[in-house]
Image (cartoon, rainbow, N blue to C red; front, side, top):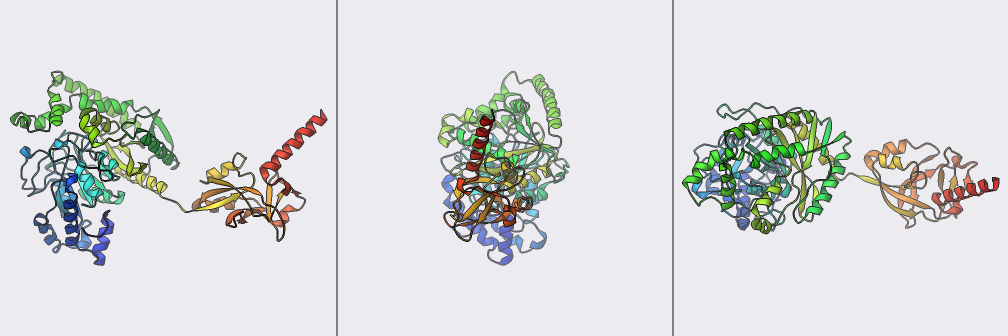
Length: 590
């Protein structure tokens, strides 16, 4: 295996090519080696092969890399999307055919210089959200192999996560382009229905299907969107849908009330969601809590209503003509469409009901973005094998509504629920509002990134529970610990309204004073310091362990006529003594 990094991004790889550090051939050879080493993880149906890829490597010599945004960038393709000369199986060998043309999305990527390296495993016929419904084996999670990878775009997500592609194509009807992203710590973009052409894609629900992208970074997903988006004249489902203005939403919508979490890590997922909500609050955008029953009612139509018949219309004739070749649980799901109650009248009844849901969602999402967990938990592969229906159903709890309601969606990492257990959230917006999602995701990422901070020593009204603590909190400060100064300070009660303490360091003598140590972002520290009124200010305070930390000090002129309260050992004890003295005086007056 090659020694270069496994997490590859477009910008990083382009830099390596420009510097001459790597060549496309070296990258492809490493991908082939990695795929072979991970063969038992069932990532590929048609694995990377130099015999196939060489034609694209040779073609690079004829192309101007400066003009092509994806020159030499390897990508993986879910095996329900056509790549000319590679079999398309949709996860069923008997269904396999050899396309002579690329799917429209693949053609656009190749035209931009990208290299298709192989076809990835999937839940058969893109029917599943777990990544275990394949006769080619259940794809292992990239971080914890005992867990599911998510589906149906299982191999596409894991290939990117394990450095066997820079980005990959998946498809999404009910969450297949988002759930695997969350479970493998990736970005997953599901564009507006019709924004990317679906010509050359094996249909699941043809009116709802979307091609999607998995990547390590928001920038990579956005670049792929720029290359692929646009109408395809010979695709009846293609639409001209612009990406929308790149701006933050006017408000965030969050689910009202407690959410359902499931699986062996349910409690950890709940905590991770709560942390994600706190991060969202830090963005300072207006937040509105909404009843998600609307979205769940729409989602129920996908599998509990007649939309499952759309899957049967695409695949039923094949299944009937080839008894016993379909993955058992997949066939069970698809044959659910043959129930007598799913007649023509039920289709129109459900369609009319959905139109009402779509109108309500459109009004709700006007200038807004909805944020929900991408998944409410995960499962071990063993648990899914023991209970394949209900475990799969749970995975779609927060995703199934999306395409039915004609929404755009962006799944992004949001911390961790445990060791090697990533947690993800999905941002939803109206059709044609991906720009809003990109901007929101960028703001969330910036809020999650570690910010430079400084310690600040406080000795008076900014301490916990005292009147100016709110200023600390408003500037993003976090309490660290209680501490003491070195024994060389004097504490004075200043003649201010309200009274404040002044901390002075003495050249000789003095006492150790109780203080608090807080941590404040550097970005807000300057504004905080500028607002401190004289004679107080921020200087250097020596703590009892000898460390020197920024903190509140007082200029000497401010202590004229001030009361020496050093003997109390700290402002809290001084306040207690003052209060006690006042109480005694009041008793004497009585």
